Image (cartoon, rainbow, N blue to C red; front, side, top):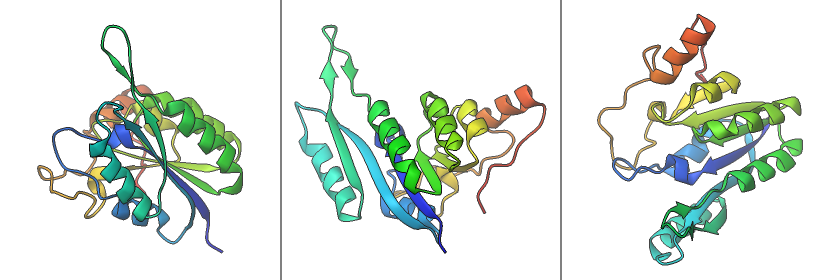
Length: 189
């Protein structure tokens, strides 16, 4: 019997203004890998003054089977933009984890460390996928498994500067090694 899995994508955290775009169909295929993908959620923020560029992205995500949760940005008096979707993602992950065996978080945001622990306390396996240079070592440490986006074959729509596999030289793993005195292995096979 296949494990039941859920994918929760923090789209803003996976977006890079400069560089390659992610092929979300490949990401979805990678995480399913023989598992039954029951949930496939993407959390996307929208500029209320210029929603058109993101609407095509949202439509494409829906076409490949993602449930898209969208939220408009808000601007403070000083002009800063606030578009945090962390709470929406956390609530969905916690409430939906009950029906899942494996929860996959696609984000490098260390704000999710407590969420990872909470889901693990429900008896669920938590895997994290993120850019290797954008993940906090605390998130790697808490996850049951970690995969660097750069290590996923064909994940980029346009090739980045040659993707480097995550090694013990990667900043997050170096910091973890300093704290724990050893390198832990987090790569899904």
